[in-house]
Image (cartoon, rainbow over all chains, first blue to last red; front, side, top):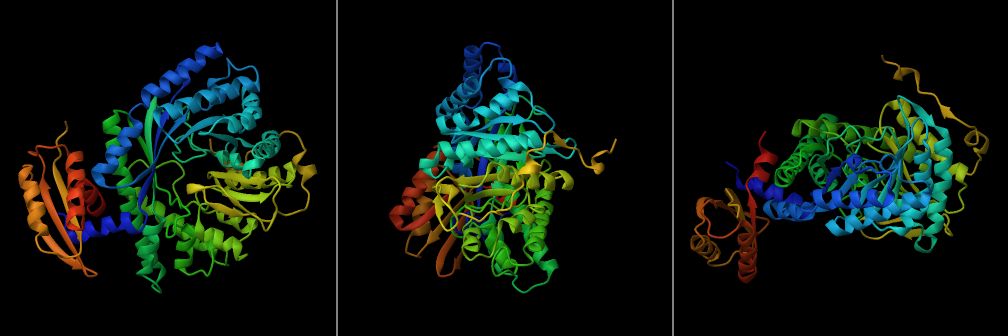
Length: 454
Length: 93
């Protein structure tokens, strides 16, 4: 039987250490909505999302009450819209009108974000892919809850450099269109290498074509729980350190597994995966950077940071896989800048640079995330940063991503406020040397030799 | 209305006369059976845990959560009511 010590431990995790279920994300396939008539397509999409997800928000709240565990977000991911809108959309505006439909559906069912305004172009772009990408600035400006992602590269296909070049320009356009609000719409846009089909986290969630008609994916989080557990083993050996992280990750993931099973049962929708990520928020004590400091660094970014993060990421996975048979998505430590108070402190102390963050993305679960850069950064430079990040993912056979925010009208030394869970960020300096001639080459970078496994 | 199974009720706060009596009275009135009670003091605070069987409860789980929370407010303690699975999942392999 459960004893009082265990009950107190669990409740302290929730009440004092910010343990929460970060998101229940309902993936919905829109492939059966496809129609060459745009109006009919929009009706089909709206009808399907509002039908499948009608009880999502309510179910989330019921589970919160049953277990007294906060479920911060209820979200939806859909089939990449470039596929869904391919036959009906003839212009970028046609695609943007699909984003309006997604936004309306998200409001109707009470989810705070809907992901899947996406294109998968790791080897080449179809006409529809390109139209969707060109519609992203309009779509993100006009809608509130729609999130967009573009998969630009993979280990199997290499890097689509034409798409990388285009995304540099698109990102600046998104920034320009929301310049009166510190270019915040860029937060809703992320580019990937090796994007997973079942990621529940935004902005990069989409419902892959390998998935079932509808599926429940759950993302857990608990940097504060790991940090508190590590406070008790200061000065101990690496073995003790690793054991502590593993045990904590196990406990956190089990909560996610329970919530996923309950949600799946109550909604009669199959359970997909648990994403066992350490996802920070700007709240004090909910920081991945603070864990790195607890492991023994003065600031995240100090020498040793990459090694400490590699250790942390690996132990989180090892603890988590024992807790759920179906682990997927991104699964690991996130290192966003604006969403992590410890990371913001590091930037302000000049302890961390963009280049060090890039190195850290080799060993963590995602990539350059929520990083504000000067608004006068050239499109080719942004493409260069993206290309570097794609190369890391391609060669290391892992997911990498870039979510950069060029803040129009601001430069190094300024700070931008994104609000709420998105936090704030000091603008980081970018290497000023040009990569124009590299980015302006046409075509794609071939897949690496170790991808040929057949 | 779905009836709940085993439930963990925790009471945390400053110790005062009659906490257990008040909570037990509420549970009895609503036909909730207490299977086990334990208590301890953590950092000066009174911590009590009850394992209860809500299978025969006259009210829904959601109503009990709210009413116990309100009762806690009256006594000046925090009362939480959670299904047992969250603790089982986290602490048992």
